[in-house]
Length: 75
Image (cartoon, rainbow, N blue to C red; front, side):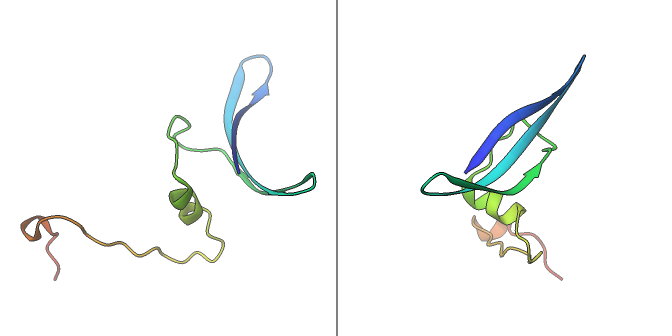
């Protein structure tokens, strides 16, 4: 579960905060991670968020889709 909110530090500082929670019934919530996003207005899909928060630092596989003439030049 992704919770979006703000940390407020008086008098004027308001920082965005995203918190990833793991909810297990009955009434148990574990905080997986919390971070201050670079782009707080941007909403991430679950798959993208999972890729961003991978603990094993593995790179995700990227597949190019589109016409062959638009493929990047590979050496």
